[in-house]
Figure (cartoon, rainbow, N blue to C red):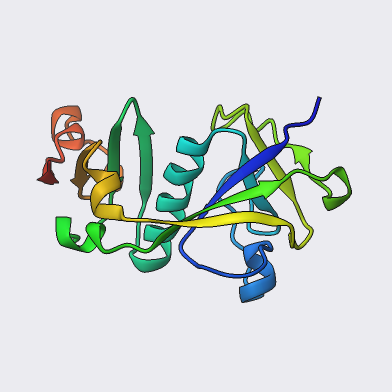
Length: 171
């Protein structure tokens, strides 16, 4: 049975939704199965906002890793990102009416473990509504850690040195 609605998080407020590749003509692969050739949405509103936040900061900063587990966000980057920077990130949540003829298929990506995600290559016009999300308010419900990106593996380097890359922002 298909869901009645899907949720999509985004940095942009727009009248229609389409895969990022259609905006940029630049192909980006996130893992072995996902790329910006598709528009992604899921059946869980809170997850859509998390994914939208990740996408938004990746467009603004050079992020090497973004991970959310149990209201804890880990961001790995070599950029100096401040709390204020993250609190100003634009975020929108789209509520989309599910129509099979929009080409939605279950994603089933084994790499990210998200089993509520759908994808399509189509442009979506039937948006039920779009809500602005205040990043500052949303982030107040999370523990956030920003660390430097892991150094490259160096032959002969001690395991302790390689694993002790401390956080430079944590709240």
